Image 1 (cartoon, rainbow, N blue to C red):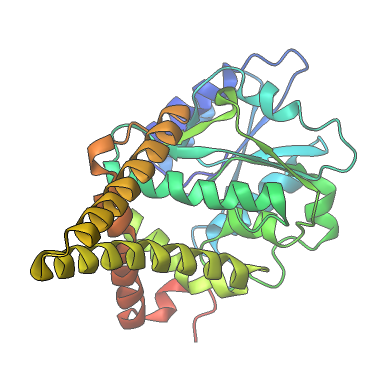
Image 2 (image 1 turned 180 degrees about the vertical axis):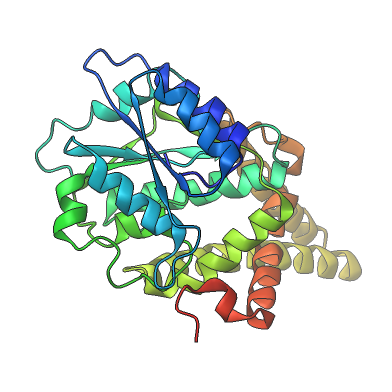
Length: 331
């Protein structure tokens, strides 16, 4: 468990992990920043259970992000071959989380197990929708091709894969992306299993506006270093283009038909627009219900369209941002 949240989050979420129903036994390794007295007090209290091992990282690292250093220390401290890494901002929705994820570790061809994540109901509908949409992309990619990234913190992997592959060597300069690079660096076709059963879900506490903005800007900063990012971005772009093109074409045809009193074209264009709205709304409703995302059905079209403009705004902020704030290799 990497401490990237508040002491309260660490306290509640470690308690949820310790309550896991896993008869085979497990150890919890909590990694936090040295000098955070509140978090240290929380970890000392949980250490009394005998299942929590605590270690700390320096408050400042010159050539490696604190989060990547925390993951590295935690993995090396683990006594077992399989490591399930998460973040203190995330909590399991079931006491079967560990058992459900671990049930995929019997296949010799599997090196990674990728689980589903989303935000809690306290997050905005747009934040939950965007996470659901991104999870659909990354989980589909892992199922059909070579896994690209996690877009969350619910990943189980072989310790030997991380150690033999020199950990984060090659992407140390990025402050974030610790979970994405864990998977991306050594993912191969067929070596990643997707676990989407409800018992394996993790929910992240609602982010602040600053946290949400910084995570998106950080992804823009390091995404081009991810293996396979070109096809991922191409699919994103094509989906967005054809969605907007479909709406614009239907609206333009409807407007032209109304002005020219072409009733056949008007009926056809309105039917096409209505069919598109109904189809996309029904699809989102089914997926949202399946993954308990609690996204308002009436807001489907607005949320989909907002994704593009939100992404464009983040890109603009990134262009204007001081890139030294996003790297550990400061000049």
